[in-house]
Length: 154
Image 1 (cartoon, rainbow, N blue to C red):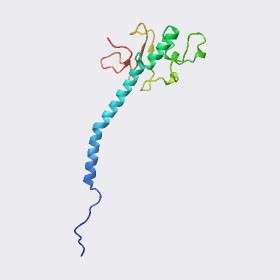
Image 2: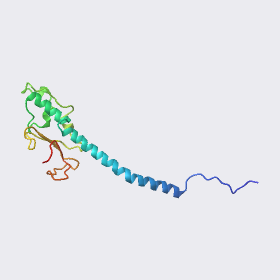
Image 3: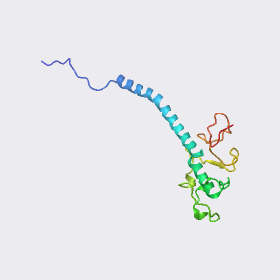
């Protein structure tokens, strides 16, 4: 005689599946926001790295000044760092381009153009360069501003 009372169970019950889904949702609720905040922090660090004196823009401006004896003025802007030597027949000392790529590619991590002013209003003896930060707006130097600048507010 065969014993019919012993059966092998295979698969998961609905309650077990829902319990696992609930645990995964709970974990995601804690992990996903941290990932997004880390991504935003990385973008801020990239923008800082570009605008500070030892950043890519700062190094390009210093190389320009080394050759030309001055920084590009506000009207020339950061585009002056990208001009090929052949376009600068008026300046025999110009040895650019001082940055790789094209001026159109020079964007902050939020795809906005960097702002430049020379002579600077804050750095009067050199230049001011900044990004409006994640919100893309001028915060006017307010406390808690997300603007990223090559100067420290006083």
